[in-house]
Amino acid sequence: MIEVRPFSTLGAANDGWLDARHHFSFAGYHDPARVHWGNLRVWNDDAIAAKSGFPPHPHNDMEIITYVREGAITHRDSMGNEGRTEAGDVQVMSAGTGVTHSEYNMEDETTRLFQIWIIPDRTGATPSWGARPFPKDDRAGKFVTLASGFAEDTDALTIQTSARVLGATLRAGESVTYPTSPDRHLYLVPATGSIRVDNETAQARDGVAITGLESFTVTAIEDSEIVMVDAA
Image 1 (cartoon, one colour):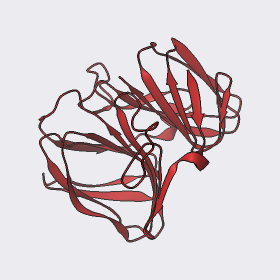
Image 2 (cartoon, rainbow, N blue to C red):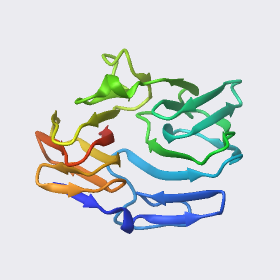
Image 3 (cartoon, rainbow, N blue to C red):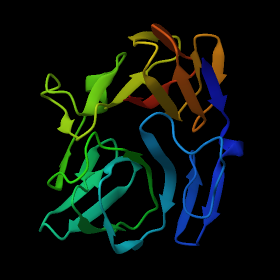
Image 4 (cartoon, rainbow, N blue to C red):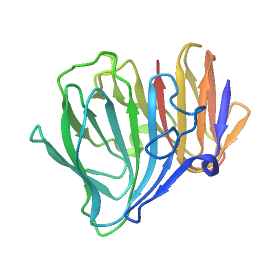
């Protein structure tokens, strides 16, 4: 099954400083058909105005991955971590037994990012945070694992769930085939450009939900930057 979820059908909320689109039910947006996709619980497409952001607030028992598309985000948390994550790079926070954090756009421009939440394999884990750069040239023409709960993915950031977050950049006309299994739940979003997933076409910031397949092929119609979650 491949289901394209057009950007125009996503949930929306605009608080002035935050212009958000919700691929799944979140805050004041609820769609019983879009509560989660396997263990993938949240995919928010956020635009955060300059010199604003999320003040300190708590989380527990959730894997939270932030993929910065434009600008940068500055993270601080109750574990003493602080870091600035720039466009194309990734940060992860395993909330575990509980952590309080803030996420601010300290830049002079709007920051645009994907915020992804995945349900952990077990509750009560030790909380942690990490970030690292992932140069886009390193994922040219292929999917590269950015965050993973699998031990073999030694070059990826660690998350506490049986999932991978992957990124790819494809030139127009390029294709990449991704092997999977019918029990997995894949969800991908072209951050830029338009793509074809097997025979289905998706535009920039549309969601594509995939399950029940042994593999699928992504072809770039235009130059595209793609982010994907492979979840249980």
